Image (cartoon, rainbow, N blue to C red; front, side, top):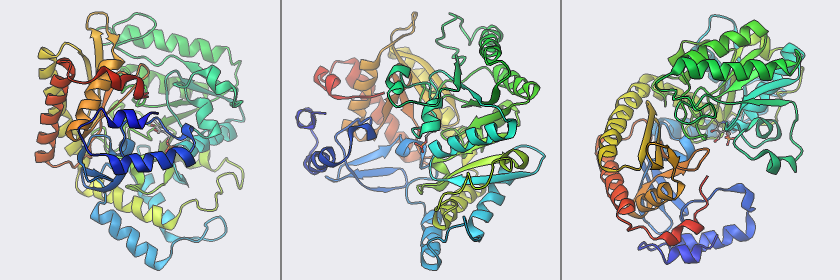
Length: 463
Ligand SMILES: Cc1ncc(COP(=O)(O)O)c(C=O)c1O
């Protein structure tokens, strides 16, 4: 990335950020990042972030849907400090510790289902997906996992193998797990069947289930589990028809396989409920959680049916730092904050307000093609032709560049790289939300009015 060129395209002083970026590029491999703006983050509090040069931003990315409770939430900081002074951690691979036990109790109580439950811990979404794959295989004695095209599940071997959004030929050089099959996720707005899933959700459900049945039939009884995001996040915030999710879950039970609800991005209140799967009234066998779970600390959890989790042979969930005391203390404080302050309700109210705002803006900005929202899971699909729903990645990047320039962190994502990702903290104060929407308006005008230099496009990677 030519950051020096980018530096010339902004009015901001970003010299300190650029120094850090130059050092980063010498020492940290490129594969670590899909970089957007020339910005090194130095400080954050609540819904605000400052870069190394002191520029202030409102955070509509929350470190990739991590800070549901905001940056540096006092309850999380307090829990971390108290735990740090008492005991950093002692491995639960050999002994016992109350912090992971407390978190397991809280998590098992938070998920749907009237059966004995347990929780296994890790550090990020990727390893928790790996654990889910292990559990499905151990419990069924079968090998195949059904995943979905354009899904994102992580970058460890198992989770990367199950990730659909990465080009399979590129992935091939890493020799991924070959026993993962992919079916098309029912995207109501754009799909290979040419069905308008908003107008005909039943038809889309039928088409997608047909593909699932066919794919599974080809596995000749070898299916162990179905791994699915209840809303496809990095795919571009895609909401499948409710009937599809319900019938897929029924199909999993009929087949006697494990239904894995992958909530790394959608969980912890962001959808307007603690877990997005609750919107469908489904009881999954296992739920995968990470990102927002730790309130900024690295912790993941695989929560669900005790019999399935207990089928994994000893010691295949044993990592030295699993159930780390500080991370678990932070997660318990985060969960408690979300529950006690009813942040899911705030997500519902703020999300509706933002979606309504975009619906009004769509009257004057024809490139706003589709607004997808549930709570503060929001994707705004930018198109060059509204009728044909043609993705416009360049316009989406211009909007996000203009927003960054004006002090709002807003990136793009999606299978076509053309979706604005709106993911503020669930407790963003009203006055900051007002300010963010003013910036958003000015950014839409900048992009529409040709005020964003074309020269940024070759320099921004984006999804
Ligand atoms: C849905 C989903 N699953 C899994 C992951 C991987 O999580 P991590 O990056 O914490 O390993 C991500 C990360 O973006 C995600 O969005």
